[in-house]
Length: 264
Image (cartoon, rainbow, N blue to C red; front, side, top):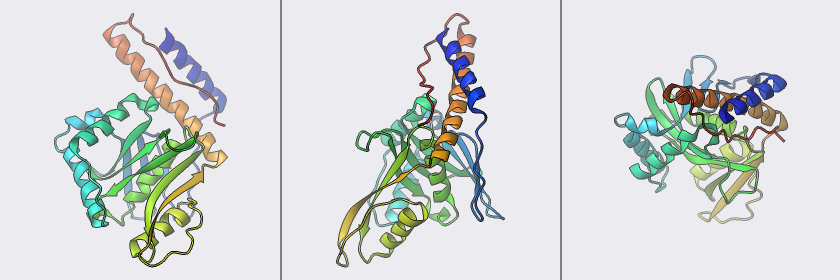
């Protein structure tokens, strides 16, 4: 069967590549483990840990989950003086996109402290408006009551780890207003701490705004780690698909459509 053949192909590739190795955290940086669908970010000392998962349609069956996602987006952006909104239709649409597992293009990452949903972000392999091989993350929103505790950092880590499994660069955008404190902090975070490059902003007058489009290259070493993680993700997905198909009908094995190619 095609799924079985694809699974064997992936297993051979894993044997050739070896298991994924996590980069050693720098001093003060969190340790990170897991695959794209379940990324655990542990902060040093007593700062705790945050679990970031990829949302699926299963989240729609949890009472209050969709409403909570919409509320986080609205309250987070309102607190920042923005007017971003997400209705339940949009939230459900984004969650359903995660059902395709490794084949999903755009997904919604959900951050948890224990059992409490505290933030979300999106990541996309191919937007249609970024260059080929350049992914994107955005819709970063953290419950104001949990801001400043590492939630945003954990979401960015999870989104960028996922993008590293399939693309060579990534892009973000934000609005910058000269002289505004929030804009100053965003620029320092995006373009200094996170390493994005938005180019020169030129001479701007106080109160003048511009839309900054920022990109960064994913280091070759991290692309290789990402490729190994992607092989693990595809293997787990194919094994789950085979198990489900065989339990329904031992004769009914479907088509495997995953591309197993080396990272560039």
